[in-house]
Image (cartoon, rainbow over all chains, first blue to last red):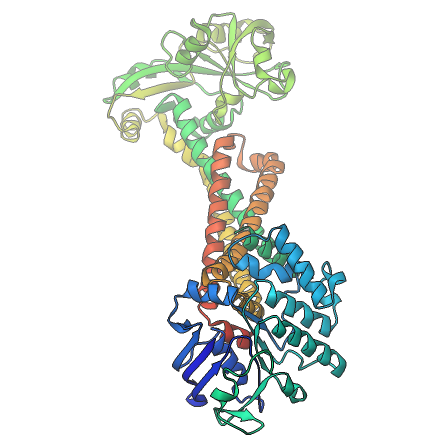
Length: 235
Length: 402
């Protein structure tokens, strides 16, 4: 479970997030929307241990992640979390398979045969099994995003944080990627996704980030309950 | 760590031109410094060797022949000058003088053995303390009248290995001599000198119809002086000249100073160039490296998001800088070595024939020192961007890299 308690964040004396309390159940599929520059990515980054909040706590499985030491936080990011970004995030000098295996190396060990096989199966799952030896520049935008999703899954994380993963993709590719996330969620992985694609709000629970606060979307009960316990497996 | 190496290698290949430019700058600086250091080391070795092998603390020569004497002692240029042998006794009476031994210089007229014209020097094997102890050690007995001792560079060009000349018969002024032994290189005129016994030297000038002016037994060319223990050779040389205005007393230090003046200028120029190149290389490599790191901020943020620890990011950047500096240093040392090797004759010619190139051990030490300096520069150059970037929050790095 992810719990945000009284989260606040300022950039240059301007509040981006204020007193956000949020609880996301295991295996939930949560979509966060809001206007550009409204703090959605910041919220995701705080949740994922990428940037420190000015106020409040983030608890993942009851562990306050911002009280962890740097190596512990890095290990948590490595093992429990998977990130998919809105920009092309593959390392251009590495082949697709090596890109997918990268988090294993950052976890402190060299990838072994099992890891390679698992990476191959992930690439097959996201539909680019034939591209494992290709370089990112040889892939389309959609294929790059699929490879990034495979990379986010390589350490079998329990949470995927996706920041507008379909923002720059055409509609049909967007639908395929969203379907992929849905499948991943069905396997019990919690997904928190920042998106403008609210056509897919039905996949899970949607929240609107507005005026530094979270609201249910469409308007309804408080975000805590909206994205709460009842929000499992996208239902 | 293997993965970090792998990422570094991949990244260096990403922009090969930039990588090679940084390596090239470093290599140029290291090559120049290597060359300067090798020459400088050579000076030290040469001075040390010269002092050790010169044998005498002071060489007394006729005052008017001071420059010629320097020429024969430094370069082995065949030349002759004489003074009364009675001066030796006067010099010996100077306070501070321990031992003396006379030498007579002849000009070789038919050095058929040799590619260069050599200096012939007669010395007294009984009283000499410069050559004689060495001959005694090498051959087991004093030099006999039918033997000659040759300098290291006298016949090597003809016979090949100098050792092969030992025991061979050579003709000087119509007289046959056996090569008793070969002197070790000194970097001084002795390398181009053939030593005879004093008696034979005098006799040759009388018996050879080729020698223009016979030398009398009461004439000598130089008096080798060893000062008493604890005496300052320069002070004793001053006393000798004060008491005997007709002579010049040359110290070993004077000889080596004279020799090293020209070489020192060259080394100073090289060190200056090396310093300038090093500064430029560090500035350029530092800027390019900082630029390269700045351009990869997002990537570094991604690494952190994937679970890379600060330490790993730090290692990644420092290691990359060290690889660039190390490759540059290695190439620079190799280039410097090649430059030194292929231009050694030219440099020797420029400086004079007395310069001794440093031995393998010295070259290795210099190469190691330059390489370590390059690696240290790499570490220092990588530290700042590594500290700056690894200290960023992953999200901050990603945002700044966009």
